[in-house]
Length: 231
Ligand SMILES: Cc1cc2nc3c(=O)[nH]c(=O)nc-3n(C[C@H](O)[C@H](O)[C@H](O)COP(=O)(O)O)c2cc1C
Image (cartoon, rainbow, N blue to C red; front, side, top):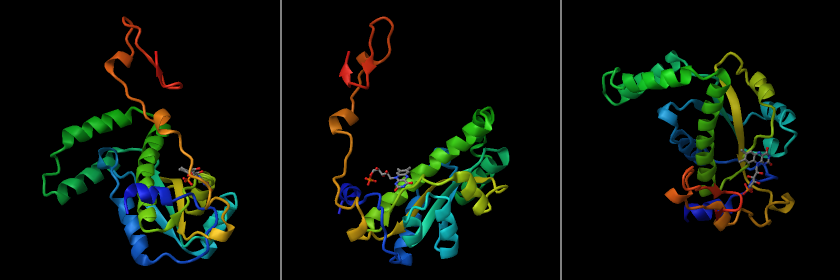
């Protein structure tokens, strides 16, 4: 099986059948999430795994009652840093240097660049930047689940503030970003299972640019991405 076949196989499962995902497959998916790259290697996020039905029931109530939350085997919740600080960034860099057997100050100049750059941005920017990194991990988990033939539904359909409260995240320095129920499709009751996978046509999706297309006041270069027709 190739990655492209896995991605064709997967879909945002609307109805799951409650079957358990094995620990081995779950661990594989979580490891893919852990191995994701992140900006400056900070891994400014974590994954919370929930299979407790009583907790899932509460989460379903703040996730538009989506059935997959109760019918899944495990719910993965990505939570990301609510902001950057010297302490947080230094902790990661210290760990990285220790793991690589390097003096802790090896990357101090780079670390200071990040600290100065991020420090000047507001709290919203920082939380947003960290949240974006969590989606890379989330995507890796979705691809790994597909490879393992485990169904998954990417979900933003929940109220993050309520989930943060429910999961006791307030004051933890983390905010929930996105969730992923894992399980198995209930084919006979899932309206999406046999629908064609629809994506933007390749020729619209991919555009090649050259220097002639770059903004240039003298040549009047330019590019209209909405038509993908070169001016
Ligand atoms: C970040 C994100 C959030 C989504 N939120 C939900 C959701 O809350 N509930 C749901 O049923 N589908 C949700 N979807 C599924 C998308 O609608 C679906 O991925 C898209 O239509 C493409 O279809 P496919 O995943 O079946 O290929 C979400 C997808 C992504 C990537």
